[in-house]
Image 1 (cartoon, rainbow, N blue to C red):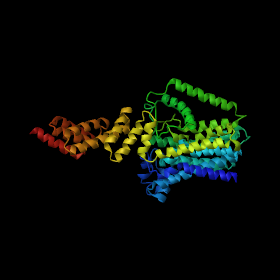
Image 2 (cartoon, rainbow, N blue to C red):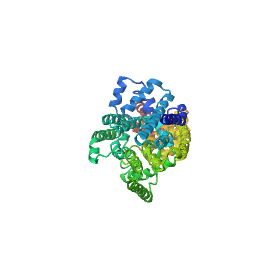
Image 3 (cartoon, rainbow, N blue to C red):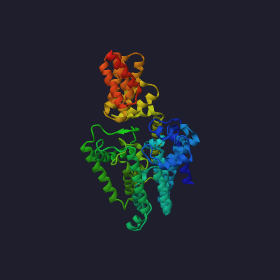
Image 4 (cartoon, helix red, strand yellow):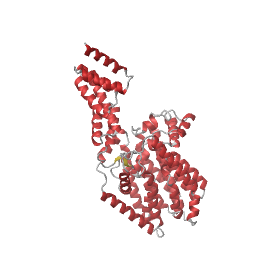
Length: 513
């Protein structure tokens, strides 16, 4: 009865903390690619769409079960964002309950297990994974991974292998599960076999992990998402990895100023910071290893954190973020295990644990509101981070879609000022300027239009229409030579662009006259 009561309490608490998400919409950050503008998703669950899910690399990913879950949601809810959010929340509640049942079943400690599951369920760092429709892959992958842990604990190895495969088909984040299982074998599972025997039985898991890692790298490389070494040199990535391990620790304990994107520091990470981070990580690792016999939960928790975070720590960099809240979805469990068992959480100390969980629930309730729409999301990110060029760029996109062009241009300008040469920001800024310039041109403000087109072309140079408009504006101003140069550039960009060809012929006739 006590276990059932804890499950009910956890489910109610998690739903209450995340309830505001049911009023949220989709956001412009990946949701169009994943769901709203993806014809293989927004036509629902069909045989052809399922076949596409298993054969296509889209949005830099290959995760067929995630695509199928989105297709199923569209079949059930259509474009109603509430239904898509509800599915994510229900999966997260299921993960919370499964984590509690697995941990309490393997350790026999209901109250420490309830604390770990409670923190997992309502920690604000998990809002990104649950409230962002595009991150369905996090909660779905974890669902199958925890089921795999439960099957493994019952010695149903091939069931565990199959569930591990399902987890990898939703997201390849859990590729380090075979290593984690070797840690869990000692505590809490208490297995006595030799290391050779334990490793041998993990061979199917390792084989799947290698295949999944290869598939993930192939998909990211095919989509151009892997950061080039000239953008983020290996030394920079290694320094950020060390510092991020420490930052994630801090975020677990003090989850403040959470954002949808954390940029790399423009000034880099100081050698002192990197050295201190490495020293702290080494010190904790040594201490956890030394006490592994007396307090095995400390070693298991710390190893869980380090192992499961490794694929997302940025040594192989996907995207340009320095870190991301979603990467803590599974690794945080290890830290809370070490805290719960290390602090001796029990019935008598449950009040303190409940207070910590309740505080996290309130912070999560607040954090969910920032995901209400794209504008609230990116304004919050700008408010809590420094030099966040991507937040300014994405806010510009949201404002542009709402027809607030002047505000959008200001955000794009800020983005390209912070990070000159950023491809997306430059493109969006140039395109927005072209839109303003075209409106000015049609209103007869040719001098203003010419200036806007020239500024736009600095940021998006390969535009035959913009070069043509600029040429016409120059011709109206009487600068026929410059106009001809614009038309020539337009035709070099697109030799078939008829307006440039016609305008060039007209100006050429004027010159001959």
